[in-house]
Length: 377
Image (cartoon, rainbow, N blue to C red; front, side, top):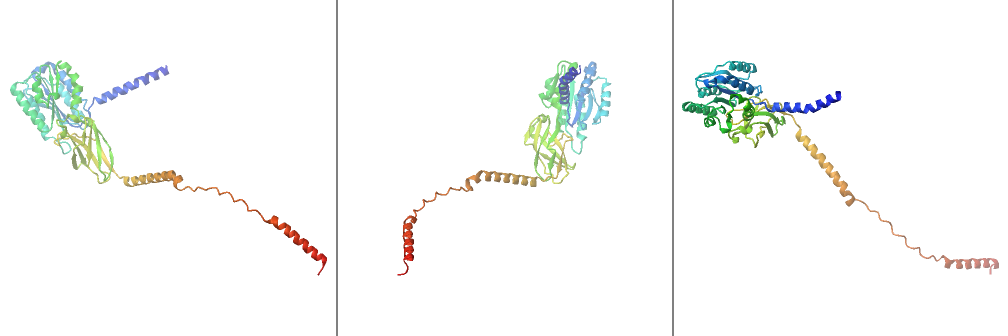
């Protein structure tokens, strides 16, 4: 039984990991300002709970602690249910207030945009204007005057750097909403009615989320130039990718913007400023509109002390010595080997004349012996 349980656990574990990864992919870590502008006119009276559930589910997907959120409702006039805040307790409180709203009145969408524009104009985050995303929801068709003013206010929001999305439910006018939104691609049609709102949450999340997830490298050598790879999502959501900028905030005092050398939807390749001092910290931001607003992040780069020059010199020296030894080993037998040749054989000995001298000596000795025997003459 234990063996079967272990096998079952091994089989289920990849599925659990895949589910967790999928849920993580369906969340947004982007740090920007998110405005919900919601139709509270009489036409949605019987569907308010579906609108509330849609907003609650979508709001839970934006999980960055630096993201700020605001809830605005409009009918014959507009009301800011929740002013822009990153406080999660306040956001939950705003959702509870939103739940108790009672729809009724006309459809003055432009009044809702006015409330958002007031906040966008006055709000900054860390000394710079934070990027804004507006999600406006309505049903039905706007009257011509209402549409005109809504278009004007949406254009004003864009002049502040906001990205405008529209969610149209049931009998909406797609031409009107594509004009109010940034483009037809920024409109999410829900033709199946209010109960189908949950079905577009992932699509809205994917298109509206602009997030910075990581930077490589995160540690650099002081005094040296370098490039960084900014990894994230949604960098193609810019109206014009030529307006995308990497922004480096050095020690919370100096901001330097750089144009990426390569732009993809999931990463940017950016030249970075040289950090002269050890211990300098740079926080990374991205602008989608040439520096008008910025998407913040907690991703940072730190400068450190490096001996890269000495290390490089030593490495090159070692390689040079190894190469020299290899060359010596290869060419030594060819140029410096002493070849010892065998000596030539000795010449044959000359014939000896000892044989001719022996009889002479013998005769001489015999003569001397004879003379000795004969005595003096």
